[in-house]
Length: 114
Image 1 (cartoon, rainbow, N blue to C red):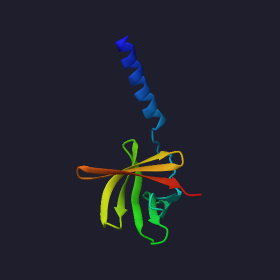
Image 2: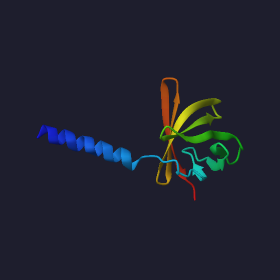
Image 3: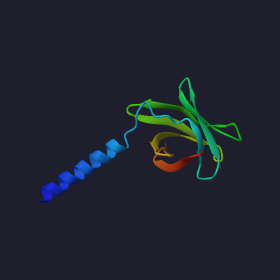
């Protein structure tokens, strides 16, 4: 019985990873609202996608591209003048961004603005 429970658990993990699998055809284009209320406009560029702050015209996400089965980018925090590598995940009308700088990481979620 214990082996069946472990098997069911492993199948559940596999199914959830397939459900959230990223694809090269994902489209990040559009307006995204940050948790602080700012609007970031993501559009296609020659290198993939780029995200720019609507009011300040500052590039927040650059070089968004699909690499090794995931979306990666560089994110810029203008308030702290810090850049970090990040991974992006489209989850319905939300964009989950996991930024990593050294040993530290931070996850933010932006919502598609209508």
